[in-house]
Length: 186
Image (cartoon, rainbow, N blue to C red; front, side, top):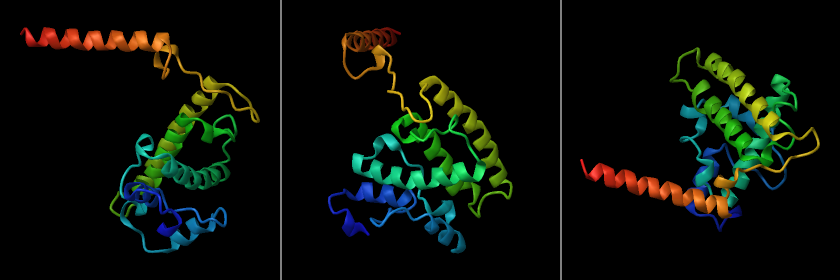
């Protein structure tokens, strides 16, 4: 499979493998999950550790997102989750991606790891119920409806550019410098 992605650094390819496998060019392979369930269980659900979405390259993010989308549709079908919790445009907002990727990783790495307690799946289901509340709150804060994906709203101070952002950054740097100077006086 790695020959399909010759331009990717090795770390990105490893991250994609940890995300649950690469998606074949032929389409979405939902049955692949079912086949993996029949195989010998692997520690941590076959994943080597948590995936840091922010540390992935854009190409690795695209591959992880493709695999996550298959998992999310299965989650929505299995638990009959309404669009008010996971809207069809969830993949356009990083907040949803982080929540759903964390749920997927927790299920695959902990809930069904043979080394975990037999109650681990129940713990995951409890965490799912908590995450559903956060997903609903996130969807409510974004607005939008079933078909309309709202643009992300970023406070001016947290924006990548702009006067308010530059002013805030200067304030933080001054505060940090003052704290350093006060600490060295002790």
